[in-house]
Length: 146
Image (cartoon, rainbow, N blue to C red; front, side, top):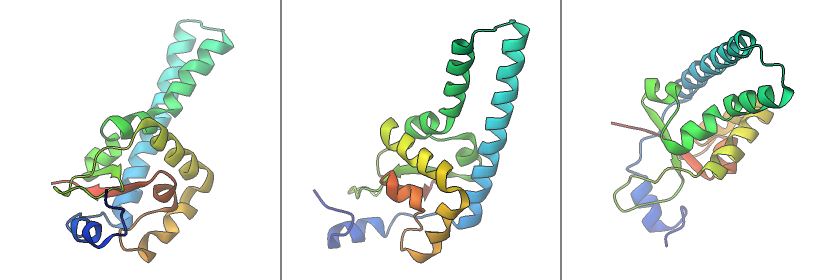
């Protein structure tokens, strides 16, 4: 199998188009709005159903926190869809279409993104594939889609 640094991989990965920093920031802002909306709707639902169980509340809000990792591992988030981007494994494939990351990679990527915040994006312009720190942690790459 080719590693991302092998000559064959570099040739294949050259055909992958990566989004600019502004496109990624816009997608993140859309996803932040979706997150806030889901939290608000979740709290309205729990209040309407008069749910007082801390465990039920914790499960619901835990699932809302997993919105981005779940959506990223299945396909893409709403912000990614609007901006025409997708998170994929940083893995060269002959057709130039890397597979989706798995849920574990998506969770690791998301946790690093949450902990580092905007700092994670500072390295995007300093590497060939415009990968952020959280992309390195999740072994992923963000690509433009046609």
